[in-house]
Image 1 (cartoon, rainbow, N blue to C red):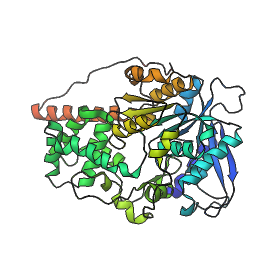
Image 2 (cartoon, one colour):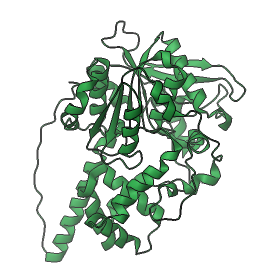
Image 3 (cartoon, helix red, strand yellow):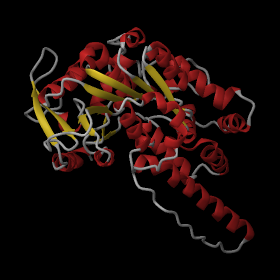
Image 4 (tube, one colour):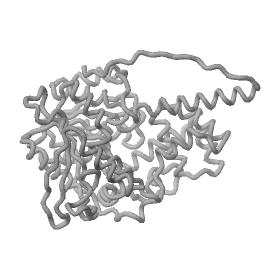
Length: 428
């Protein structure tokens, strides 16, 4: 399938407005290759606001194809965005001969030097850094390695250390296993059916992050009634990592960039044997990637030296980088603010309009106003496929409930009509 999709994805990416490439020289661990990046409104002259480098999560998420709509919204608000296609991903995947970059080239230090090279090529002495999830680790690492080039920073779903797995374990188990409420009772009941613990964890966590109890509880009830529940299977496809290393060319190239996750960020951590262990998520892939060697930076200490404004954006339902991580970073960084929104992991994907507004306020020097404005930004319209996914899942649950009621009463159902206005995408 990849052999078919690769040329299609490459062709589409090359036609995206603003795409450029620079030749990265060969090093001891990497051959030379063309690094691709895209800049909003590149070449149009004077920019309304200083540029910001936006780094998505992963490792493996593309920058050029998946975030076209993000850049469109940003341009409407006068934001100048630079997005660098991560080495090993999309248009930056191969050397000039068309061969995949070797796994030796997959190092965080090399990735942040790629970002610096793009800023040099664009004649940008300083930029704002926006990183989401894995991208927040890159943004923070860039700050440690190139502090003079950072004007400010927005860390969305802050990932700061492989040691934070214990925080993740605690958050997951408190919500879904150890508490006495309906949510944990339903999860424990489903676990007693013998369902695979890894699948149970991944689906339940994703459902709660995407839609809270409003999505999770009906999902658990539907799965108890039928192992073939379509919404459960849709979430399973979305959330789980099996032994077939996921790859969608130009969108998600984890098969190569994922080397960084295992070798430098501890993605292959050993499960502790207790229920709902987040280490189970990547366990099927552990023997396909290098073992953990250690992190390239001590970010816990590094953030104490950040002398620029830092915004920590944290989802109240984030179970992959739970809120205590952002709280710890906010306490350590000397000029930081913490903004919480009622979302799960990675607002860049689930609520991009809120992220862009927060970025604009940061660039304008209004970041101290963000905590008080969090609820207002949270209510801004959801845009993008990932942001709308929870709505589709909830619609699927409602259809299933209506069909079951229809079967029980032996009659026909009626279809209601609904209408809503579509708010404009605006940066406040």
